[in-house]
Length: 168
Image (cartoon, rainbow, N blue to C red; front, side, top):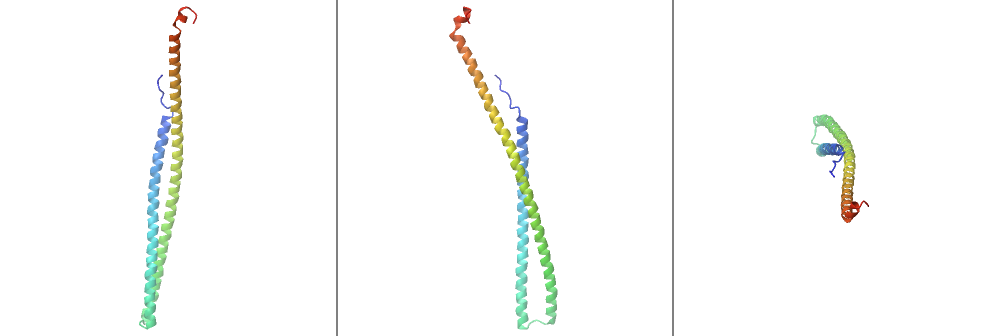
């Protein structure tokens, strides 16, 4: 008996290639999410450093003002510096908000890619399991056919005279 090829082999190859593509997409999405997360962390660090630097500068200015080392011109410059500081804080907060939004989009994309990869893996697993059951069925049929053939051959050897006498 000749062995048949698995009839759904093209489907199995298609599902395997879709799984490979989905896994590559997931890897890319994970890399993008990692980069977005790094950008967010960097934006938070820049904001925090700016906050710390301005707090140190304000403390030094306050000490100088209390000692009487500052004049009216210094106080006017402090006002201009405060407006520039506020603009920089706003810029850093906007940058951080954009980084967070980018990270959220990247995370959503990664979750979508993860779900797609899981679906493709399940589809590929279904075909692999079916192929294994089909192969086992083919082996069982081949064994049954070989057993029947052996039984017929054994039976024919056991009763050679019956067929010659017309009794068979």
